[in-house]
Image 1: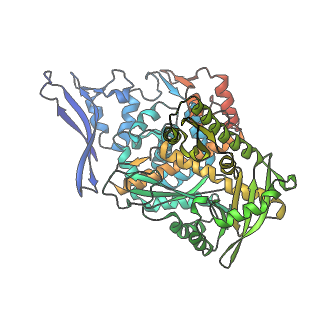
Image 2: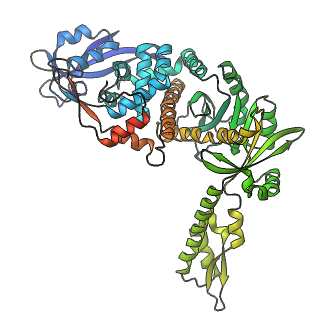
Image 3: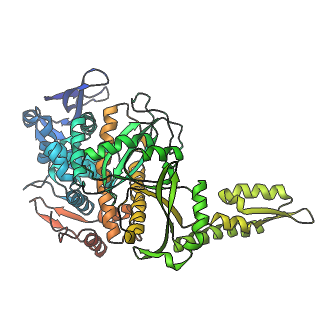
Length: 566
């Protein structure tokens, strides 16, 4: 139950103004006691009216009788929505005219509906909490800003009322996310329900990342291999995804646990969630002889990259390099000519299928870029005058970086020095550019389509890696500063919902071939310019929409709907 609290002004308040707050008590699990929370409603004016906080009134001088404030104060869940309504925050005859941003909000809502995210959130958490989670996910997806800014952002968008209810208010949002983090039952029920939506898929992309923490009191926080090279303890966040990059479920584990040790439990969870014939797709970072033995013992399908530093990989490269140069090995992958050779990989007594791929176009591009950089350094060094070989060597270390082994110092007869390229080193550095070696196990593809299918499953990890980058750099999970484990779990759950929206957009941008010309952020920036006027009488008028905005929506959304529809 909530109540109204009046507060006198400070010592400098000569006019004796009183400030009105809505207050309530709630249990603080960290302090192990009940604490008071409150937010500012407005100030008490002469005559007994309350001048409403401009956060609710949109900047206008709106006054509400104190008796009405008291009459609605008992129910905190509806008080903020009521206050916004009477302050002109919603369309009503005689209300306040406003301009809503409709473009990015319309796309976020459509992605949430088409992906099934809205349906599953509301189905598990109910209309109010599920709607609030959808609204917060949309805010994180579009802006990546802190949660306390969600209320302001949502209030400016044309979104369902449940998406911007009292749970997303600045005073309630952190408590709400913490409660979601503490509700393990409903979070797991959502993940199970969501995964079963894609239970027909076979491949299971899997990757993990670390999230650094500044808090000393989180139970999950431990020292481990930090992927950001930060001297901070961490929490590990791992993600399982479908072949098209759509997230299926996630796991949060202590930071000291190696990625490969989480795979056995992940497979059991995947099977329990209804993923048929799970087949792990892992990048080269997972490979080691010991890890491969553990993976073979898991009795599941496997698609795994191998680094060229492994002796057996280097041997296979030498064996098949000439064959991969022949056009007889060509197949088309999304219209791009690739070359493929199959062989076997031996690990102790086990035998795995090995696939070597060669992309001539990528080889030429990477070799040209590498040579351009090296010879550019040589040209730059030619404009310098080195008195001896030590000065030239120092210049190489300072300017060449990882390209330093491809350069050498030549001493002239007068003692001066110059920098020259090492042709053999340059050739060796680009020899394996465009080549990929992939191990597979437990595949049932026919011979004709095996090469393309293996390459597709392996390359699909790129989407998962992009999602991780977005999760940490764009969605607010780069570093943790909370001291509450429930808050961490709630933030990660919200981050997962945000990744669903990101994956749905990535899929549509690939289909529309927009990745070559626009980024996700530029799409949102452009659509955020589309607006609609809501008059005092509640009439919605869509303002001018540019051709670029109409084209974007038409290419991303194929439902036939437009911004003219709410």
